[in-house]
Image 1 (tube, helix red, strand yellow):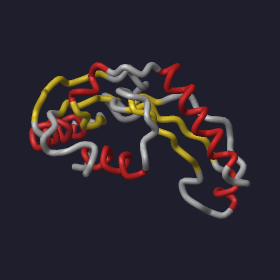
Image 2 (cartoon, one colour; image 1 turned 45 degrees about the vertical axis):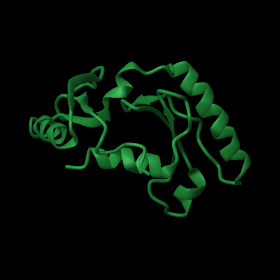
Image 3 (cartoon, helix red, strand yellow; image 1 turned 120 degrees about the vertical axis):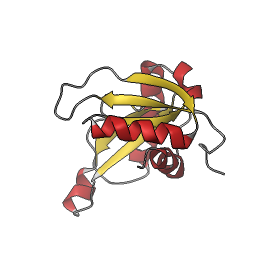
Image 4 (tube, helix red, strand yellow; image 1 turned 90 degrees about the horizontal axis):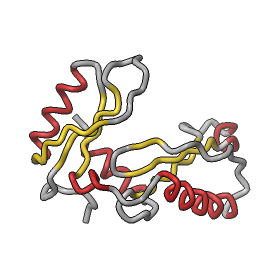
Length: 146
């Protein structure tokens, strides 16, 4: 079962208003709509040169702070580093993706082998702090596919 689905209600989380504009604080377009309605609004935001994400409404009132997420991401990153001989950069500051905090680290070993994107991302759920699996991240990104 996918973590986000057709029975959820959704909002648009606007992350940029115009291409090449300074990055503003993200903001919610509070719709509580079905996926079809919200995707139509997201297409309008993108047509105007902005960008955003479709996010289930339950994530408006997140419970995991940036600092809490960073501690969880660092713990997960330590496990990743211990499980491989790959060489990584330090973990980035978090980016806000509406439903999760995302942290990234360059994987220098992968980059030397020509792997794209040559980085490792860790997404921390804003509601309960669990680390998202690759399938959860993919399901979340599919919501915003227009």
